[in-house]
Amino acid sequence: MSDRPLLLEIITALEEQGLDRDEYQLQRMIDAEALERLVDSTGPQTDLEIRFSVEEFRVVVTSSDIAVLRIS
Image (cartoon, rainbow, N blue to C red; front, side, top):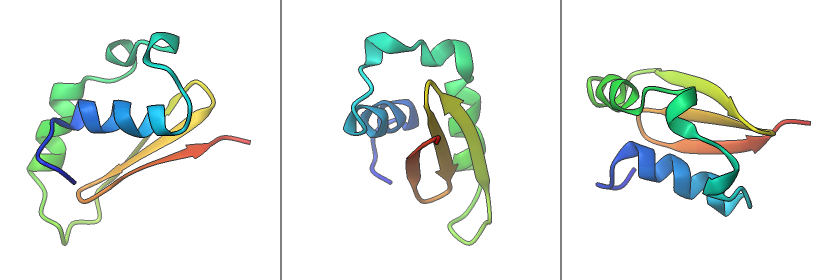
């Protein structure tokens, strides 16, 4: 991941899938600060995987990546 805050990484990943940030309120779905602390507390060898849904997408956060998948 980049040096940008995790919240911005998640928002960017959602926007790349076509979901405008005005369509959801991420701060009501997750505690971004707690999520970032959790991810930062793990190393790249850790099998951390956190999943949550935003509209019709599933967001998967690992210690090294963010993936956004459309829920069928």
